[in-house]
Length: 108
Image 1 (cartoon, one colour):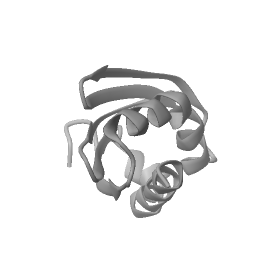
Image 2: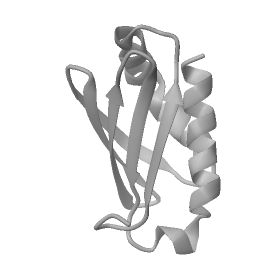
Image 3: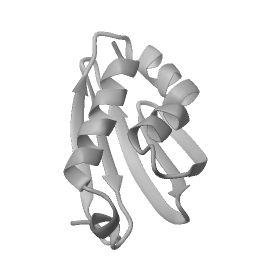
């Protein structure tokens, strides 16, 4: 569990160049997060990339969500720090499956 609440960690396989993965994330991460969390109002999604490592932050129903993304030749590693009490509001396992599904679709 992270400092703010439960963590979600996942590795998503891809067959794209790291540059293509980053470009797709920059263009579509906000929409994919909204689809993964349909009941939440995802707002103010920000991404910052240094090479193949990126950070992101947004708010969902007024709660802060932060995470990191790391792209290598065959996988995207994602870690999401959910806010304290998130597990009382959402099913973290379902949310993780939704995020994995959306990112897998994005990188297909």
